[in-house]
Length: 75
Figure 1 (cartoon, rainbow, N blue to C red):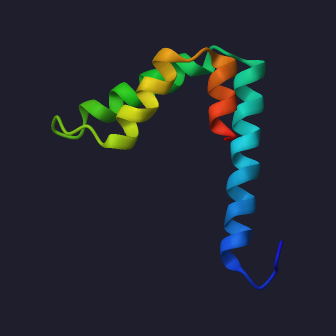
Figure 2: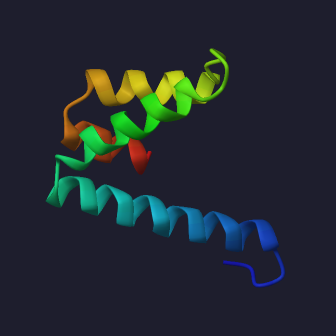
């Protein structure tokens, strides 16, 4: 990582967070259900507007097994 490139630092932090999230999902697959509930609540509070990223994540959480979700997170 180039210390002078702030984007590289942000990318490294995001990758570490993604890896930690994936590890938690692998250890506790039931966390996917919590993610779905959080997304449903978020989608209800935007006056009917469903942000495309929320719809995409809901599809991922609904159609992939937790192990596959973990792989998607670190993709």
